[in-house]
Amino acid sequence: MFAADKADLMFAEDSTSYDVTASATYDPSTGSVAPGTVTNHGMFCPGLSLDFQGRPVVTGGATDNKVSIFDEESDSWVSGQNMTIGRGYHAQITLSDGHIFTIGRFLERRSRG
Image (cartoon, rainbow, N blue to C red; front, side, top):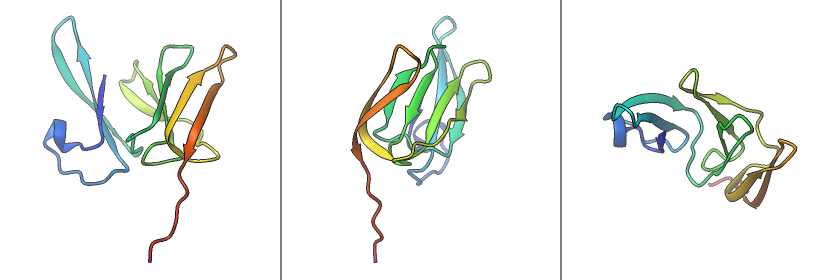
C-alpha cells in the first residue's frame, strides 16, 4: 500500500488540501497498482503502527486528532476513535495488550489573524 498527501501525485486529480490522503494498493504477484480511497485524514508526519490483525493504524499528522485504520478486505480506510490530544511528528507502538501508545509532539492550534 502507498499513500500520499496530494492526490494529484498518483491519480492526476487536483488536490491542494493537506487534510486528505490518497492511497493505492500494489499487488506484487501481478505487478498491478489499484487506486485506493481518498481519506479525510491528512497523513503528513503521522504516527504509524500495526494492530493485532496486521492492519496499519495511522494517527495524527496534518489532521492532528484523526485515527485511520486500513481495512484490506474492503480496500479502504476506516475511521477510528479520534485522539484526545492531536499530534504530529510523534511516535507510536502497539503494546502487548493491544492498546496503541503514542508519545511525542502535540500540535497546538493557534488562530491566525
